[in-house]
Image 1 (tube, each protein chain N blue to C red):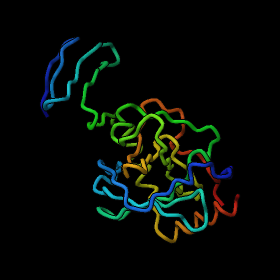
Image 2 (cartoon, rainbow over the protein chains, first blue to last red):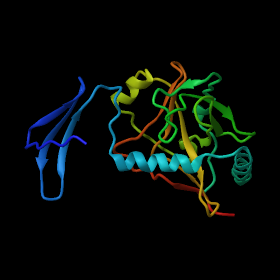
Image 3 (cartoon, helix red, strand yellow):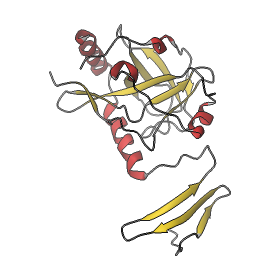
Length: 76
Length: 140
């Protein structure tokens, strides 16, 4: 892992288009500003992980699928 | 709660494979997906990966789950989908089954497909008040 020391308003560049800038340093956290090209998606890691885990728990077999579809249809 | 009648957007149909340039979180290798009718049960649809890992989701129109469901796409999201401001988009929320048997639906991170460009992505909104696991039906 690359490790940098940055002060307020200082930044690092990743590749040609991604800039990560320190906006504020507080007692409990650091506020960062990210500039990235539109094709680069930027997310809080924990949000990404939550969605990934939800997706992985959602994969359904054909049997399950038919079962779930039936339950939902019956309830209408 | 039971799904409400399907709103007009379920008339949008996608018959060819849709390209997801980044895949879907957890299924990054799956770049091409098809949207199939799930049994006879509209507004349910099946989202099925045609390459990469084997994956199949049951999805539902989020507006059929929650009346007035609204999720704003960022400018970057629109650009990735090649969507204009008034583009008709297909919204799909992934249905999950808890170990308890309860059915929940992911309203926080919907799948959005632009049928014109045949491009899709799972939107991870930064500020979304909808739950990740909205209960659709309790355990049997």
